[in-house]
Picture 1 (spheres, rainbow over the protein chains, first blue to last red):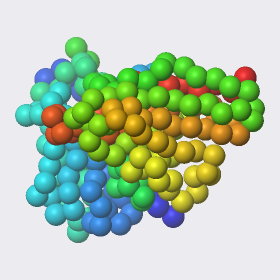
Picture 2: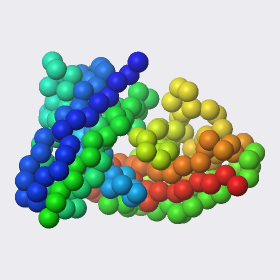
Picture 3: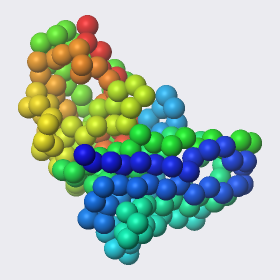
Picture 4: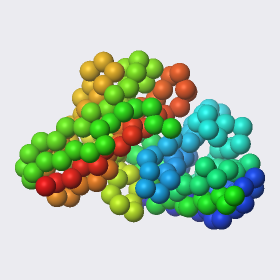
Length: 115
Length: 110
């Protein structure tokens, strides 16, 4: 059974930092992505990283503040979030092989930034 | 932020066909694959269509994707109550160097 599990969410003050983690079955074989969603609102793509970590892209809204990385030896994906703002409050989903035949998402972890 | 435009809602009676549109530009829908997701309340999105036309294993052939120019569509035939949910299109945007989602469409089975 495929497993994708996010962790690390929580309450943080504006300007603070948080690191999200995601463990996924077969992680080393796939591009990995982060997608976020304000509860009750639409989906927003955040970032992606290729299999060896050398190709990375970010949404303009998080560029310069968020850093995606991976440790294939630990089957783990990370999202380091700095200079957090109230508008970063959302459920953060980790997605394996986003838009691919082996696409699979975790259940998400909630990040709340208080102002 | 949503760059792809979808109708906010769509509905149909059981057994009917519902079609959802996704309007983009030449930098996203017009030049790359489109994918479609369904999201049920309180759950993660599920991929229905990838590479514009293909279905992952386990997705019934009642779901079909198409594209013409800068617009894509998802058709759901033989509508069933379990098809209710929020549907999103998504595509890579060359100008933004990132993925862009549609605004989302809530499907209701009457």
